[in-house]
Length: 90
Image (cartoon, rainbow, N blue to C red; front, side, top):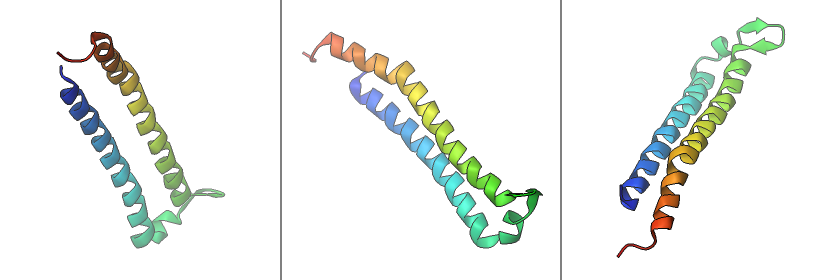
């Protein structure tokens, strides 16, 4: 594996996770804009669908961040260390 391949792999992971977060966030924003009655539906006293979905957007950001950090620690950091140990390319 080359450093360029590793860089492309990191870019693909970052782009995919960013796209997922954009879809989650803008999906929530579109619901706020176009379906306020649904978001105002009470699930329990003091808890509406909108509040629950807003909290889930935040949780989704945490989960996606956790996934990236886990992937980077398991794959990216190990391979970068291997490149550093090998020294500069001839």
